[in-house]
Amino acid sequence: MQSLAGKKIHFIGIGGSGMSGLARIALSDGITVSGSDAKESSVLSALRALGATVYAHHAAENVADADVVIYSTAIAATNPEMAFAVQRSIPILTRAQALAMLMHGSKSIAVAGTHGKTTTSSMMTVALQACGTDPSFAIGGTLMASGSNAHRGTGEFFVAEADESDGSFIEYRPLAAIVTNIEHDHVDFFQTADEVTSAFEKFASTISAQGVLVYCADDEGSRQLGQSHTQCETASYGKSESADLRIDNISLLAMGSSARVIWRGRSVGTLELQVPGEHNLLNAAACLAMGLSLELPAHQLLTGLHSFRGAGRRFELKATEHGIRVVDDYGHHPTEIKVTLDAARRYAGDGRVLVIFQPHRYSRTQAFLKDFSTALDAADDVTLLEIYAASEKPIPGISAQLIAENMKNGHFIPNFVEASERVIALAKPGDVIITLGAGDVNSLAPIIAEGLAKRFA
Image (cartoon, rainbow, N blue to C red; front, side):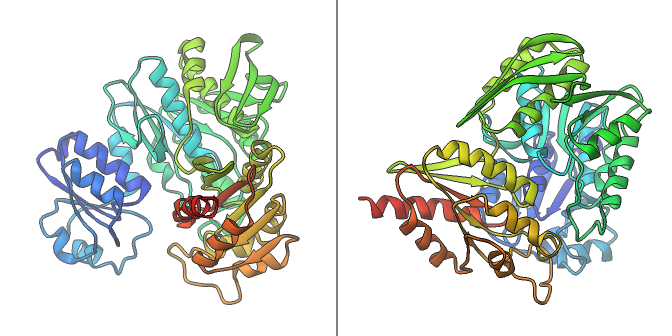
């Protein structure tokens, strides 16, 4: 990126969680940044405050003086800025290629996996910070401790969330990597589970021979990858007796968890978290395995993980009104929904778990229709919004209504206002309301909180 100093980079889709992080780091590196997105947002305002020129629309003239264009994979080839860049032969990079450039020269740690990438990346960052290393990071969500999704640190480490959704994570070529799990998802790109496995195998092959691959011994896909990998050192983690880093004596609380940590046969302390769920103990165990493999002190890593208070949209408490808690969560795959609702049940105690769920993409809904119904039925009541299309075209006959029809307690109400009013009227003190999904369902959390305040005033 140093070669781009004095030049101008234009980001198409700069408002996205991944793209905005790259823009922040580029600005920190002294690079002139411009960008565009389809609509105004707080992210655009924040980037303007940092010195970027940002447009809330797409137009060819936005890239007229750009030296390099970086684009999100959500951007179509017909986008006027993309078309102009191609016509004028302006160099074009994918987000993954740009992130690889930003990581160059650092001791890079890429965090991959079908689930848990953002939380694990965030935990790894906080753990490294507790070791005094001031790492750079680029994460697909907001790190609560800093209020940002990216930072150019002064230290030698760079933590990057490695998104497998389009296979582009092979661009990163990290020193080290974590693979939390491997499961079929992103069915718009990967037609079969074998294609997903193949993508992770290619990713693992890009890890430095002097580095380390950390994998989950409890997950079949991750375990098979780690056990077959011979190009660099490996370290496993999990509850399994065979794991290099094993957690046991597990205690799960309403909004926390703990476990004893055993590293290659030796107890190194107790892992105490302020976030709920066994899945988060495993995410933290991955970070410990990585940190210990890099010869960082166990007590400082444990201290950092204990200080971790979560990542944005990952079981994030948004409000409490008259004993009713409103939580927002990004879960959008049946496996993610299962662990989220398990944590929610513990958090609710004697109260009920009420969910507003917005499916993400038609292809995912079609592929996992029955799995969604089964996972969501763990809640006491579920209001289903219509599918958030993202960049997809609708698939005839596929609707969130199909999920509701296969549920015991599902109610299809596609209107945002009506869905919110239903949950506000239904809630009782002690209940937990969750806005769930990767689309814009999170916009309902403050509306619900306000409605509860008025109802009980």
